[in-house]
Length: 354
Image (cartoon, rainbow, N blue to C red):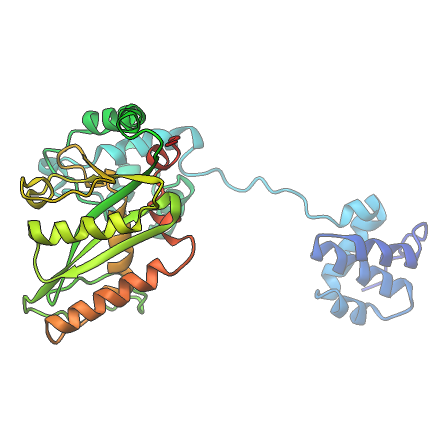
């Protein structure tokens, strides 16, 4: 194979200087390979320096002779057209969101193979399993486990509560002049021997196993958090009751500064609204709309605790459960910023309270 003469109008020093400044590593390697040839090295040696064979170096020399340094850049490739055009992806997303028809499709939710069939049936796009997975990722979709929602949940009531929340705080502030309001979220979490299993990493094609207890001893974490001050308090009880809730409110009361007044958001559980409940003077209880755990920010903290430190556990007895709950709570509450980042709902924490 006869050697091709290389243009001489760009010096070796200039080629190496441009290679140092080049952000594309492949272009820099081509510049250095051509510089090595001009420096007197053999073409085989120069090709090895550039990470290519002699024929590839010959092709780049042709491009360099014709176009200079710009000829060493990769040219854009049109590639074959997509099976599903970009303008059709929103329509596919709408079909996926609508879900399958049980009578027609025989399933209650689409899995990846069903979406492959859907794309082929509606658009003639015959994707492989991996190709369909990539398309869904590009569309911003992911395979998720949905959070449960009560059938009696009223989204309109939830939105109205958030919208009117500043007015409710203002009314409470008028009843407690000179006090700085704090917003707290309160709830209970049951932790028991019959615990939960969470997702984990495991080899493909293997249904991983994890031990799960079938006994029923349990305890309850009574917790409350104030995202504005990144703080919280908790008690671990063996049962829920009005007496236990009275003790919980006393703990919150002690955590409120002398110049403050806490507005405690909580659900409508019986022990939260009992006539015998003793509410300290520096607390105001504000019930959330019925069936609205989504509005109680501490629910997110319970989820973190269960997923990270309270799942996949075997508890020997009630004392073991209580000790584990205490350690789990302290492990989170002692991390600066954890309560604020996990429970800081903007509609509640960004309201001016003084």
